Structures are given as C-alpha cells and as structure tokens.
Length: 414
Image 1 (cartoon, rainbow, N blue to C red):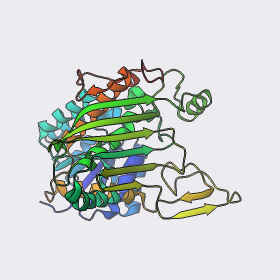
Image 2 (spheres, rainbow, N blue to C red):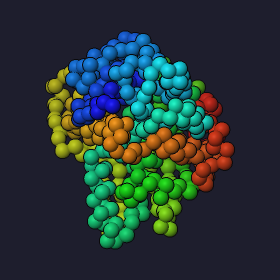
Image 3 (cartoon, rainbow, N blue to C red):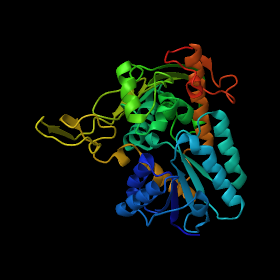
Image 4 (tube, rainbow, N blue to C red):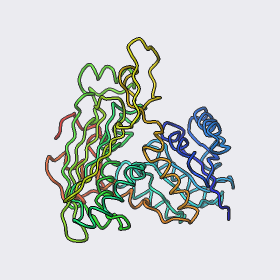
C-alpha cells in the first residue's frame, strides 16, 4: 500500500484554498483533485494547488469520477453546509457500486446543520467503513498546542486541574452569501463559528492524552442577537453586497455561550465562548484563555509580533494580504505572516493524513463532530427559551433552530 496519500477536495472556495496553503507543510500526501459544482472554480482551485506545488491537482467532472480515480485515496469535504448530505450520498454510492475505494474522509466544521443531518452523515459513512476525521483547525494552532501542553504538565500537575476556559472567534462577516442565510447555512454565527469555540474550551479543559468524554457537558446557557446587520444602514449594505435581506429573515451576528462541564475526577468546570460577525478590528481575531489555581494562558492571533504602518498617502485596493477578513489598508496593522500555520490548518492536515496512512490515532472523528452539533443545537434551544438547558436538550434529534427555519426576528427570544 502506498505510503503517500492522494487527496481530493470537494469544494473549491476560501476554505479549500486555506487547506491547500497549509499543505506546504504536509510531507506524505499530495493534493491531486478538486470537484465543485462550478467547473470554473474547480479548475481555478486545482491550478492554485499546482502553483503551490502541493500536488498535480486536476478538476473532476463529478465526485464519483474523483472517487473512481485510483490516484485518490482520501477526500477532504470543504463545501457549503447545505450540500453536505448530497455530497456524502454520492461518495457512499460510488464506493458501494465499486467505482473506487477510500482510506479516509475528512470533513470541515460543522459536520452538519443539525443533529438529524449529522447522524445521517455518520450512518452513511458507516455503510462503507471508511475512517473519518473531523476538521477543527483551531485545536491544532501551534500556540494552543504548546500552551495547553505546558500548563497541564507544569501548572495542573502541581496545583490542580484548570477550572475555566474561554474562547472567541470574531470578524466582520463571512465571504459568501450562503453563510448569511439561515436556511442554507443552518443558523447564523452560532452555527458557523461557535463550533470552533465550543470545542476549543472543552479541549483546553481536557487533560492531554485523555478523551474529550472525560469532560462532559451538563448545562448550557446561550444568547444570540443581531447587533449590527439588522440596522437599516447595514441591511442595505448586506442586500447590495450579498443579495440577502435581513429585514425579512435575519440571522444572529453575535452569540455567547456558557457550558458547565463535569470532569471524570469529580470537578465542575466552566467553558465560556463568544463569536461575532459584528467585530470591527484589523481582521479575524481568534483568542483563547485557560485558567487554573496558580496559572493561566492566553492566545490572540492579532498579537502576531509583526506590524506594518501605512499613512493615508498609501493608496491601494482592498484585500486580505495582511490578515483574513482585513478591514483596513492604512494605519498600524498587525500581520499574520503565515495564517495557514497560525490558525492550525497545516498541523491538522498533517495529522489526518497520518491518521489515514495508519501512523496516528485520530484526535477527532465524525462522532466528535456530532457531539459539537449537539452542543450547538442545545445552545440554540437555550437562546430561544431564554434559560439554561441541561445537555443534551430534549428533542435534540429533531430540533431545527428558529434562525434556520426563518422564524427568528432578531431578538434574543421568540
């Protein structure tokens, strides 16, 4: 069996290209294929992979064609949430019909838009018995990995386990129209980005080497709001730029979450998370903290160590060459020199390649992705009911958030 993995991407957009950029640090796999419903975008993404010299990628006419190519050993799903089930249905159908074989399937966050869809993804993949990996880049960020390991090894080992973790992801709004539409994306910023932060706080509170199940969620309190994009001026801007009307069907652009966990050694610990599409700063800001009896850690991607200054005389087009979701082109600007490394894409891709080659045990599987979706849906129930909810919430398997149903009107409660 080959000791190099040939990887195909389902999806050709912003997220797929971030993975490809991170692939420069992956030694034992090549990006060999891309499929997208938009053939032009697929060809462009394949050309980007070749330009990066991370593999002789080509565009495929269908997912089935990509699965059927013996050069493709594993798939990375990076497409939109609303296409998740149909993408998996085609993958499974192709394998079951003998079109090809796979050694692994990795899927971007969130695993699905709700619990029912997440369970269907797992049911489909179990039919073909292929190993899975849940892609959650922030857990693999170098500063997070190093800080967590050191605090547990030095601080927790001598003074006791940590008791509070915080995490946040904030920027000024998504790149593509489907993200803004609750019925397509599955919600607003809570569904889009709290999947990162909710898992991050649990990860930080989990002792390295122990399973996530050793830190069990028991209560969830959440709040959602449309703080910026439902204001009349911004409704007009969003309609012009994305074709989405938040005067009719808004999604939340801010979400906060408190999770109470019960640990295997009998402690109650807290995870506090927030996410925002209404943050204005230099650009994307990821942050996390972990606190214990005699120690703490903090991480903020905008504390990058490199800053540039441009006076008002420096004119140029808008872009994202300094930091993702860049909001300005002049003034004092932090620069994230290698975002694919800083945000964890490189390390997570390297890990899951090695998992599918049989060299490592997976840190995260689709079962972990399902657990995240359960936390998100419990959070939506808490926000809608305006109270703390025991985890997992009643009726969680059939629950669809009001935002996703187009029934939310922009307030914290219905």
